[in-house]
Image (cartoon, rainbow, N blue to C red; front, side):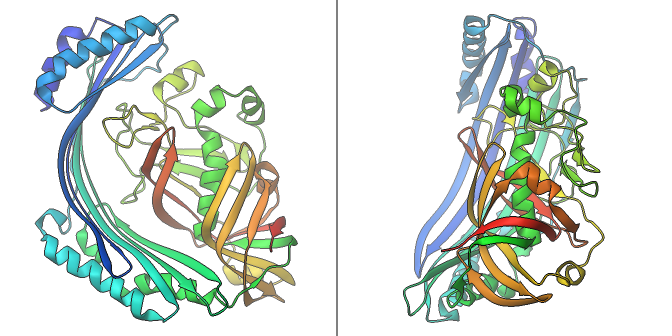
Length: 455
């Protein structure tokens, strides 16, 4: 395949400023249950690709689903780029790379029968349905996908990357006697081994336990509290409220954000360090090269409270005269790469959870996330679970906990950073591309004067 793509692109190397081809071969399985019913069972094999061309600053993107039409689609992409280009092509320089990246497999899901996969996920679904009579329904699924992405460009790069994704998703909806409805979710991912899904009964049941435990929770009284975020929620917070602001396409197109996000500017307490690290092993957002062939990196977005860097494609890096960071990503070869996060999180501090809550007379412990939104530097998140903190102890569960604020003020209101980081995998959406595999993480984080809304 690599030789065929290199031969296809060779006659066009000097036809325009830049040209690339990505081809993806994949096979996948998806099994899902809705309540007691089998909702879907799919087995899929595919080959598809995309061609991206740039001429005088104008980009085109053309997809295809068969190699027989490759030359025709290359010429179509070149013609379109020539039609729209009217400025200058600016791309950060990159040395050509030749590489093949293989997956180190544990148990390969391609060797597991559909009947065995269905039996496993059905067993977990029944555990959830039988956990408590107040469990109304479930949404449970298994997905595995093995793919190889081939990438060649007109400057001599030729990379093939294998990727395996295995995941189990376990969601429950519980209804109390008073009509109150609560939901909870658990996910279990792996990048190398189907056996990550074997023997996880306790993790599966944790979704039901969390939903049921919240049925008798009373609404929190709205006000300002010292809030402690669990590692799941601290990771989601930094991903959603700050990570997206660090994506350079957003900054480059927004003069207000350029002013707010000037590199070297203090934006947080001195103890805060925020990273985006695609080199962390085995996480959903981990990779060796991005979808432009740029090597993966560990980047500090905030270091010692100072704005240190941002996330780039080759184009945004070139236009902003900064180095590319390996953050041009697409959900598949049939989408153009755009600036995206990988594994984004808060580095560990030195505070234990017990020390963090010890002197809080009245506060809120917020756990996981039910939903949320951001608008520029403003954010609102709804906690999946929450508990009052009273006199240094975790107290009664509370519900309807929404956290609202300005991300830059919140980063300065952090009072303590835990020593217990944890990364959780998920899917991120941007620019019509959803879900892109990412991870978000961090330790427990304590923040003062957070506006907490209740019913």
